[in-house]
Image (cartoon, rainbow, N blue to C red; front, top):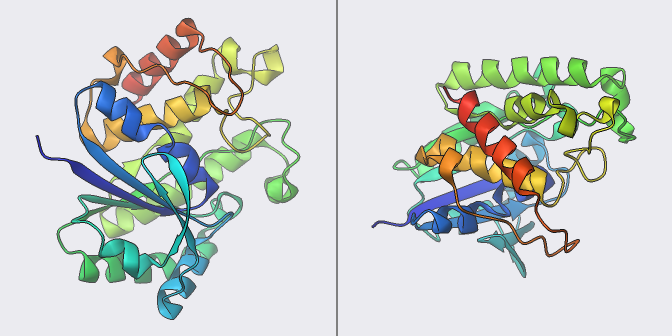
Length: 253
């Protein structure tokens, strides 16, 4: 079976999304090679500036593992015959349409020119937790529903404008928050670990399921993968994993 090569050009949110993706796909017998290019908080504007300068500014992360290697976007593009290239807006800018252009269009044009056989996708990031103390949450009146509404509208508009598939992580995270288990306002656990990054176990697991479904159409409802959380040593609650798989599957129906 051919190995599917997936490159994310992102930040800590794409780190969360790709942390378990390789292991999850492998557990389902689907070989993938996953790279995340990481700069904390990196926006579309900064990605474009880095392309212009050919800046070797990204930490190279492979199959969920961190490295001490720094690469440029052009170097990464030449490493593999990429099947998918995914990018996203920085979370704090995600709800403001004037932060997307002209950088999104320039990035997509560059990627299509350099990797004409790759399929480009846009990753819809998520709203912050309801009680988040993120410094930029004030731009959304510290209102999770407002941040979700604004960012969702922007991502959909850009995806439609350029004819790109949208990986609906933001939608799925919001669906999960509608369940008491992940609703902090009803005493549930947060699917974030710090008010904005994903929970090391459940949040990252959810995003891996979303990527596997969106890019590879894997039947994640039946996924056997159980993450081993190296960061906290927390043991996975099978009922919560099952809930996540059901909601990810339902989001694509």
